[in-house]
Amino acid sequence: MKFLYVMSHPSDRLADERAGHVVRPRQLLAGLEALGHSTAVVQAAAAPGAQGAAQSYWRLRAALPTAVALTMRDTARVVQNSRFTKSVLEQVRAARPDVLLETQVAFSSTGAVVSERTGVPLVVDDVSPVTEDEQTYDVRLRRLARARRARTLRAASLVVVTSGRLREEMVAEGIAEDRTAVLANAVPAQALVPDPAAATLRASLGFQEHDVVAAYVGSFQPFHKVQLLVRALADEAMPSQVRVLAVGDGDERSQAQALAGRLGVADRMVFTGRVPSDDVSRYMQAADLTVLPATADYTNPMKLYDYLAAGRPVVAPRQRAVQDIVGEGPVEYFEVDSVRGLVGALARLAEDSRERDRLGRAALEVASTHTWLERATALAALVDPLLERPRPGGRPLG
Image 1 (cartoon, one colour):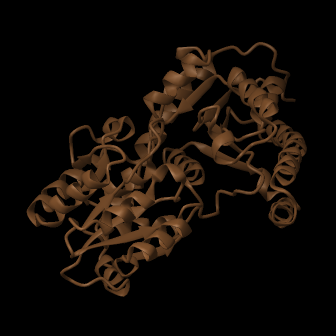
Image 2 (tube, helix red, strand yellow):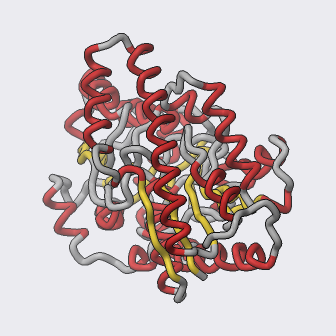
């Protein structure tokens, strides 16, 4: 099959080291190519002036009232998406792909328009709840954003989500169940291989041999509740040998660091900032265990797969998003939002190296069944029947 991947985000590119919405398509496309399929990519962020426009927005954000800057941003994204859609139409008519694959992005109707005009089936991947952009990125032109999202989902031959909870939401929104599918996140196969450089990295980060290092990796979003982990580390019941390795960057990183300073545990934490996605496994393997303080219930946390692939036990809240992946497997659960519960879970593993080893082996076994190549195979199997369906209304490509 011949896939054309459409990335409508105005500033994020597949080559960037960003969050899961970039890592996921990059890995899926690599998997499709490994299976012998043809892939091509067209990205709004690669257009002339796109990166400059993004930088201009951040300058305006600092100079203008927030509401004004956000409204200008949303308006610019609508205009930019219209231009991008014209470019994609030209490429589809030239490349003649079998299927369009698009990540859902706020204010984008590119996939819908191109599919409607050419008849090429559209697969929308990684669809998020209708409120996510409003809550996380403070979208101001909400009616327009919702209308474009709805148009995209109506035009899609297949809507792909990462969790069963999200599929339920899609059906509740009116998307036919037979046009939805769950394709969870995964790990690269190479992440399952022990990294001999992990021990050297651990030492370079300043950890001692007797330390028990609990690693968090993520984008420091509010729903990750990293401050809960900081408070747990500062609790008087926390074993003194526990240290925290916090990998990544995001809105909550500075708050977490400030809280660590106020609570007197800054010397027991290492904040690395963002690291290349290919290096994440090494950082996890430099730790003794991993911790997920919290996540959103509808998600399929990519970091959890990273934890498992590192062969490290997981400390996590008893949430559906976690249980759907690991069940009662290699995880030490604690009750949601409970500092004392998190302290207890970390303490139990910190004081029992044999249990850490047992859960670590089980984690690696679970991760081995969740590779991106397997996800790409499943995606191709979902797409193949779409090519047999007639799509009325599409114009000839020629």
